[in-house]
Image (cartoon, rainbow, N blue to C red):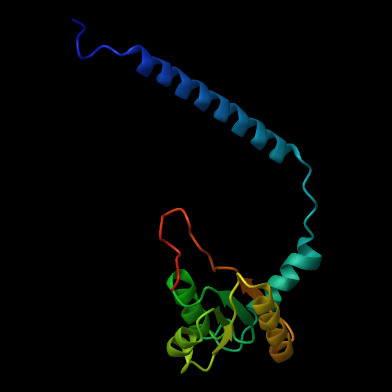
Length: 163
């Protein structure tokens, strides 16, 4: 009788397939990196564009409010990273547009913060997005920073199902 430590032909075949697949993946990844890094990159205008813009954003009136004067929109601001980011940006002096799809949640989370304005938008609905965009442009005329944080994960059955 064969010992329990010997490999069955099917497990040896699977091992060979996995090994081949890993080699092919490594070859494709190496080829992709070679193509990306050999592609000519545009010249960066540090003196004319990058540094002047960085200096403009770094000029502040107070060290406790380094983001004073900036208008920052954060999608997905009613939970998780978006919620924490919205609150921290407000603490640092930015005018923050908290974008979410639940007006009651937006109001309960940010109603008392003078630096945070709530914007109702469901990013799955283009009309809702257009209305939010028009509101932001009418009220603020520009955005300095947009944080696209809203997301939905559908890989787990039942996750992302909303009442």
